[in-house]
Image (cartoon, rainbow, N blue to C red):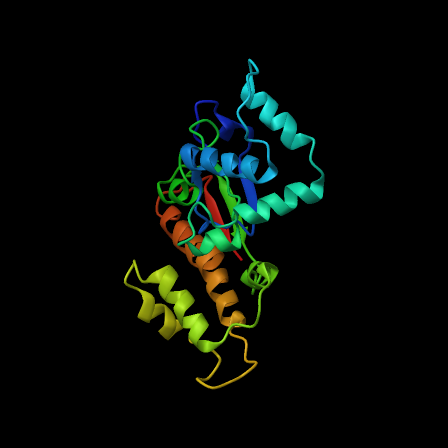
Length: 219
C-alpha cells in the first residue's frame, strides 16, 4: 500500500485487497536493519574481519553456505535484540524496512495521510489472529503475575498500562496453578497488530478518499 514513491509504484494498480496487514507492526529503519543483519552474521560465525577486497560480499557468501537449520537457529538468537521493549519484537522480529526507496513511510501513516485517496481498498483480518504469533513463540503457560509484568514492560512507558489491563484482564486468579493467560495476550496481539490500527487508518482514510474512485471496505 505504499503508493507514492519516486518510482511511482502506485501506478501499477487501482484497487487492492490486504488480508491481515499488521499495521501495528513497527518497521525497521535502515540503521536498525543493518545492526540486525550484523548480529545475524555474528550468530552464523560470518562476521569475522578479512582482507578480501569485498569483505561484505564474503560475509554473505558465508551466510549462504549455512544450512537452513543453522540460519533458523541464528535467526532465533537475534530475536528481540534490537527493540526488546516492543511487543511486536517478540511476535514478529523480522520486519519490513523503511529504505526510502520502496518504503519511505509506514503504511499505517500513509493511509492516514491519504496517499491511497484514489484507490479502492478492501482490508481485514481473521478473529484471534494474534494467537498464532503468541503461541508460536512457545514457552510455559503464563500466570497472572507474569502476564501483568509483561504488560507493564510493554505499556508502562506510554502510561496506558492500567488501561490495557482493564480492557484485557488476566483470565487467571492470584493462586491458579496451571492457568494460562496467553489467550489474553493473544487478544492484545490481535488488537495491537491488526484490529485497532486497521480501524483507525481506514477511518481516517475515509475522510480523504476520492468519492468517485476511492472506496474502503473493512471485514
